[in-house]
View 1 (cartoon, protein in one colour):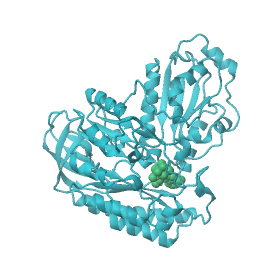
View 2 (cartoon, helix red, strand yellow):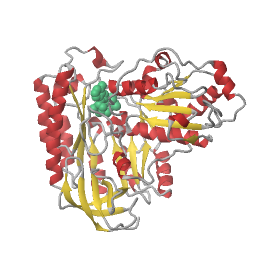
View 3 (cartoon, protein in one colour):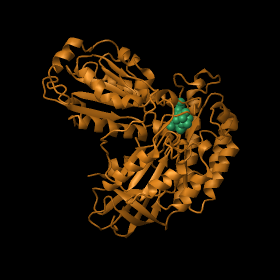
View 4 (cartoon, protein in one colour):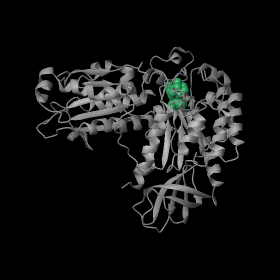
Length: 514
Ligand code: 5AD
Ligand code: SF4
């Protein structure tokens, strides 16, 4: 059963000192959050010799990978830890599905696993550091025959370099190659010591027969992988490759299956989800796909993340107006309020064009929550540019924002840009921006006191009668209800108190039938 703590984390990996407090999750962070952590240089040592690995695996069936690791019977077990964004969370669900279907068993601790996998994030330097530091832990403790694999964005970005920095790693695989994971693991089983899957040119999206989903009511569904936008600071186009959309019929078929399994909320995922381009003859527009997903019997809520402002058209707002199951929340990262910086970031819109999109959303017949991502300290950001970001925040009055210090990343055009902003100045600006956003959230949330929201109940407190869930506008609402079992139900809740990051209230009608 879900408990209070992890339910609050649901949908987002919260582990970042750079990150401002939005309410629940963000999605251009699909790519993840920066994570503090000391870098340990992973030197030589701990190498897995071909002979040892082959010997340990000889004659074993798939899924009975290593039957005796470090003297313990760990046959066919894997441990998987995920860093970063929802996209990674969901990829991990698929990776777990693939391994489970091959007879592996998932365990909670790396100590009891034959195969240890890290699904990684490299969006900011600290995220990458954290993972190298985690890998460093195995330098002396890796058990004989244990397999350590690095998946995801850092794997794609660093490639075989990872073997240099952490020679005890034997598998490095980027997200575009997950489909091949069973074969890659089979190669390790066959005696190979180092295996990589690093292509990004596949035109397939990662679909699997079996995906192990972590939340029994709310589910992710990737409709577009990769990114073609080439923002000058961003590694995603390098780590996740070009945009590939999934055929609308395949998306809808999966939604129907998920509804049959009892899921009532679907989150459509993509780095730039609204750039969706149906590759099938049907040529369904993104807004049409939203409506079609919402029309699947049993589906009560549809979310989508992250939207790129350039491709955010009126048709999406009209779909939200027309279809009640489409949630009243749009995550629309702006990054900066200065047109000069937006140009340097290659964001493809000006401040004014962005504000036109906001006006369109604010003018909708339904009240729509708007959240964003912001970067401070991009090279050349003058005090005036920064002021423009603050003034844009004052104009838009976001319901939530994720904010980050600019982090120079390998391969990105902004790496070559001059006028780097000193770290202390970035921190100073970030603190100012976060304080401003906090005040805005306090004010906006306070206005919701007295309103009634429908909440999908996702968590139960250890304390009697205390529950938590999300509103359609994606706020966390903690509430009281004497009803004994509410998990997975939709409940009407009146807001009685508001904080900067969440609301509190009491159930009006105890859980309706699903
Ligand atoms: N430095 C800081 N923040 C970044 N983001 C992406 N790349 C960087 C970077 N190099 C932020 C953007 C994006 C979110 C997912 O992460 O705000 O929307
Ligand atoms: Fe988002 Fe730009 Fe990175 Fe694409 S390149 S994921 S649009 S920040």
